[in-house]
Image (cartoon, helix red, strand yellow):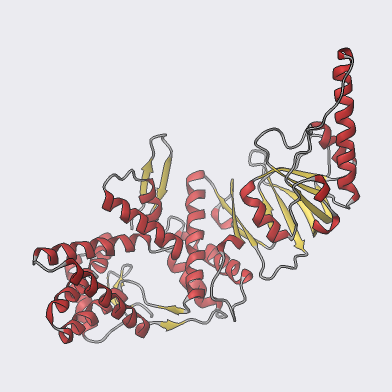
Length: 452
C-alpha cells in the first residue's frame, strides 16, 4: 500500500501505489507471478480499485493451498471447498452491507474519497471526489442505470497548474491546437462542426503535362484549383469548425489549404487521433466523413461556442466546445486534469480513474461495506464458525480459507507501523463479540467502528 518509485530500462520514472500499475511495469518471468499480474489487471478493468488487495488475498490462498496439499488433500477437494467458501463469503458480505441510494450524492462522494485517501493526491480528495461522482452522474440516469461506460468520460491531462485546478467540463476539451498559420479564426460562436478522415492536401489526381518546362507551374496551379474547390464544397455545407484526423502517410493539411480555410472563415483543428474519433463523434453528435462526397450538412454537429483557451506561454492551450446540441441518450463529459509535473499528472489521472471505477461499482451493485479490514475479519470469523458445522475434509479447507483472509488486516496493521499481532488479536476479539463493523483505525492506531 506504500508508494513505489519504479524506473524502467529507458530511465523513465513512475511513482504510484496502484497495484496494477506496479505489476504491469515489473519484468516478471515466473509463470505464477505473471498470472498474479494478470489477476491485478483484471481487477483494474473490472473494479478499478483493490488491485493490491486482490494479489495479497490470492497469495494468502495459495499459501493455504500449499499447506493443505502437504497434508495430502487432493487439489480437487481443495478447489471445491474454496469455491463453497467463496459463495458463503459473498452471502456474509451481503448481510453486512449497507444499501446505497444513487441519488444521495454525499454518500457517493464519501466512497470516492475513501478510494483517493491512499493515493499520492489524497490531499486533493475533496476536489477530485466530487468531480468523479458528478462525471458519472452526468452520463447515466441514477434511477435506471445498472452500469457506466467509462468511455463516455474523457480525461484530458494538461501540465502547468495545481491539482486543485482540475475541473469537469460540460462539453468537450481537446489538447490539439487550432491551425493558425494562415490567420484563421480562433473563436466561433454558433459553430457547425465537421469531422473529416481525408486529407486537405495534394490529392491523388491525374494531371497530364505535355511540356516539362511548364510542369511545376501547371502542378501548382492544378493543386490550387483542386484545394479551392474542396474548401468551397466544405464551406457550402455551412461548416465553420473543421476537425481533421491525423494522417500517417502525409500532412493532413497544407499551408495552401489552411489559407483557403482562413479566407472561408473556417476554424481548422488538425491531428485528431484515430482513437478519439469515436468519442468526439458521440459527444458532439458529428458523423465522420471519409471522403469529400460524403461530407454533407446533415453530418455536422452544432455548438454554441468553440474557442481556444490559453494556459500560459509554455503550456500551449486547449480547445473548448460548449453548449453542445447533442441528441444522443446519456451524455459524455470531459475532465481537464491538471498537475505541476509529469509524474504527478500521470498519478492524478490514474487516481481519478480509480475513483470513477469505484462510483461505477456502486452503480453496478448498490451496496457499501465497511473498510479497515472489518469485512475480511467478519468473513473469516463467520466462515470458521460455519466450517465446524460442515465437517469432514471440506471443513479443514474452509478453515484454512478463513485463516488466509486474516492476512489483509495483518498487512494493513504492518503497513501502518502498528504491532500487527496485537491489533489483529484485538480485532478478532471485537468481531467475536459481535462488533461486525470493527476495523483497524490507522489514524487513531486502534480498533474502532468503521462507520462512525
